[in-house]
Amino acid sequence: FYSAPYPSTPRAYPLQRLSVLRAPGPSSRTPMGFPSVHGALGLNTRPGWAPMNTAPKQVGSGSGTAGGASANVRAPAGCTMRRLLLAAGSLCSTGAHGVHLVGAPALSAAASGTPPLELRSLTPQERLRRAMPLARLHVPKCGATFMTSLFRLPGVCAHGLDTPEGRDEVKNDRCPGIFWRGEHTGFRSQYDALKNHAVIMLRQPEQRLISGYYNVGADGWQPHGWCRRAPPPNLLSYAQTAQGIAVKLLTRDGGEDLPCDHSPPSAEETALAVRRLRDGFAFVGLTEQWELSVCLLHAMFGGPCHESELRVVHAGPRRGRNGAAYDTSALRGFRDLHDGAVYEEAVRIFEEHKLLYDVSQSTCSPCFRQAGLA
Image (cartoon, rainbow, N blue to C red):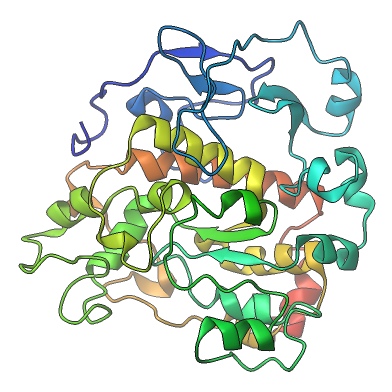
């Protein structure tokens, strides 16, 4: 199941569709152009979908394990605000928490005290104040230098912009606008407390896996996140073992050794991870669109762009010219379907927020000039 190459169809839980509207356009590819994983996984994890057993069951979204208490779930007759929402460029759907806007900021109305349609009218300073303290969920090989951008948000580091060193307690004291969690630590028990304060960068899963494989030296003489004594015989073996790390970080507990947990995610964990990404994150960025992600962060939360935020560091070897993507042919068709579902949702959120906050190559020109790129 977990190592079967795409497009063979694995077993999955039966589903009950709950969404009232579908996003337009073909479903076979993501907005980034990568083939969609939902058909191969047999699990549609978009808001408005839920894995079902013999009776309707809500996937838990709190600090416990995936599953939650049984609850009858039914699709509403319609969205009473459909015309208004469509006029605002949004879609109406239903999920575990009732009808909500697909395209509204990840900062929920319940947490912010502001109706979703009014969030866009808040100032960047108000949005940042509601989101602090920020809590980064660090998925390996998705851009560690994203912390530089967080440090530079107004008021996050009250005692200067230098990268804090030392224990987490010292870091929290120097940068009260960030809640320090350590590297690659799980999110399950902390999800409720950090909901709508979390920020994340995500990367196309196969690209992330290849980058980790070639990142020999980050963990001694082994590829990134490989904790077995013997090295992996090849890239495919590494990818099959190291898949699903984003899902694990979003749904499991564990310290910085969580990437060493090589047990594959379940279908329920994958669905829960997608829901948590949609419902619980104040910011979602994409490694493949790094410059626009930095621009979006500042459009949402204020502050000028800086050259250090857009500098390429820790670049992996064997890349094409000008940072081109890795050649995935060595994976022999293997795809990380679990993290693929999370990544597809991240792309949707990112595109929605670009529209919501008017972020594009042209509107980001001032940001890029500030950073010395234009």
